[in-house]
Image (cartoon, rainbow, N blue to C red; front, side):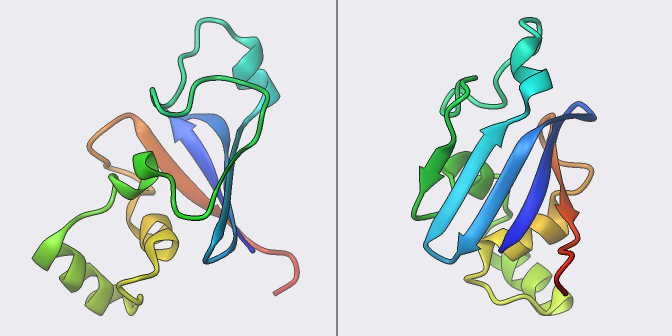
Length: 111
């Protein structure tokens, strides 16, 4: 299991979890949900208490990744499999992203 904290403009909005290559979850933090002035991180992930589940990386997060030659170069330099979208997101979306959303890997305690 791998976990990323999701931030919008530097404020923690929720967590993105990969249980395995075919099982993903996203959920908003209670504090983010309680503040009516804070928007959803994406139109495809509206603010709700429900946990979003998918068998692939959510399109919003997938679209934060580079494409083509840039992706190949990043994967080669970072030694990440090109099909490990979650790993690439964790390695490249920690700062200086195109939008307001960034992620921060959470260290697993069982390693």
